[in-house]
Image 1 (spheres, rainbow, N blue to C red):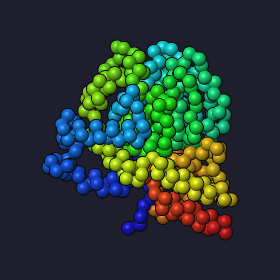
Image 2: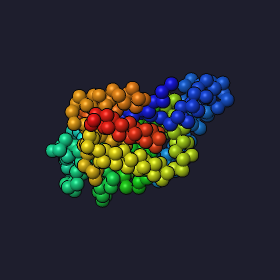
Image 3: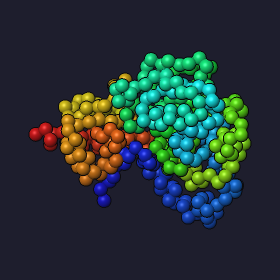
Image 4: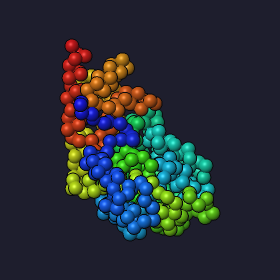
Length: 358
């Protein structure tokens, strides 16, 4: 059977070793004779899974004890509203508008207070990270999207916000590199791009923000509920959390975030070099802000792009069609995409260019 290489932006590729282990344990988890999907979320067996997953997150990201680690549901989209509902409290916050996901976060925040757009790259269709940031002195927090999957841009240096809490949607680049967790007041990430399957959202929140969050919220939308309940106030997505734990095991086995970051840099460098050395392919993002997770590029015509996508599919490269809102080509090269997969893709790209260039 032709080997498939999965370049979908999300739900996205998972490590092969993780899938094999999950398959092996699917019917009999940890020798208990039951699947992880059919045991109580309050059992000792699942308690060990969720506490181990939290411990690994804390170790990999150097999360201080003054932060809580939560496994929630609803994806980043729920956090777009839940964060301002808890933290904005009718006041103002600064948002950097760097793309489609940032715009959605801005839209939801406006329901709960005043939004100051501190900077925007919409003038160039979100192909760069805004540099001139106009922060407010009285902002409750500053919100950024660390990696925009549609525009293929990424913050390589995070902004300094002083005493104002920095909040980041890291859905598409969490665990892809090292960074200073203590520089953030809150980090959130849907799992389905770089961490696990769809259905669980990681939230890392500084405890003083939890304590200062709004009172009298509906129970399930209060951060206090989930911190007090240790992510077990209601039945969590047990299987998804179990897979996250396996993915974290896999990251550790490779050498942690330093090793992952080195591989990710190699993959991105190879793919961007192929684009830059070509006459057929043209990158869409500003060079200084190019994402190392989502590589976006165009060909000279939509007909050629459609031909590229179809022939790539026939050659085993899946998920290369750009987002419907912008078109073009997008190769998502998350942690689980091997260097070999990117090498095979670049080989295909070179052969395709020779073919169509005559």
